[in-house]
Length: 299
Image 1: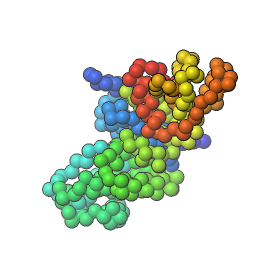
Image 2: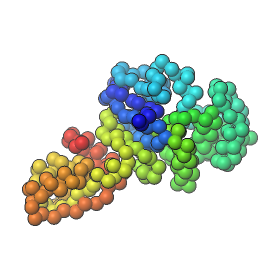
Image 3: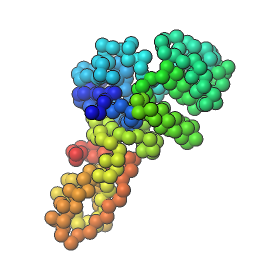
Image 4: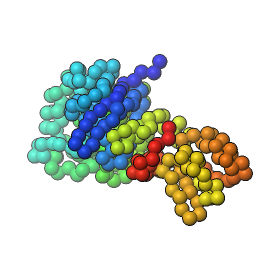
């Protein structure tokens, strides 16, 4: 039986100009979930709710089977969290920062922390203000990992980093889940990073979860349809997400290539269309386009 390390059920959080609406997804133990959406889609708000950093109006969140509101301190000892912005005492050293943060964790492993600093090439004698953005992210990762958490929650950890540092972090994520007990919720709008490492994908748009499935299933079942306008029909268009129609042809994404084939052949028995492999980036763009045009997303 599959064990879920994180379960978000019907999460509702309302602000004046934005709301999370019944956000629901589950992360199985030993896997990486990519949590993607454009900036402002609700990723950071969801993560802050998971970490019990913001109150929410409805729903429940369970981590290791425990309610996150009732077991905040206990759960934080089991979670490694890296926020989108790194906040440090800029005048203090890396070494001092590690010892300060470590004092809050019963399972803090100073030897492992220093090992990670060496691996990341972060000098422990340097002051925080002397570190580049990439080095600060690496320090945040070392701080998040040094108490041996079984759940990593990462909010845009690779944003703004150069490709070399991003790749180093992605390789680290893959190494961490080799024990099949550590799980990672990895939020990012850089879909290429997610596509490289994630086992599961949750796409959020305008505060609503649109898709939450295993990555293989999404990339296998979804596809981009392209056809000439002579084979356009409104019933077909209604089954395509992010429809683009030009002077000579149209295109859109479908979540079920087999069902689309049946529908297309029903309307155009001798018609022709092309199928292209979809990427997470293309899928996200199509979903956002549908949202902006107030078109219902097909499921």
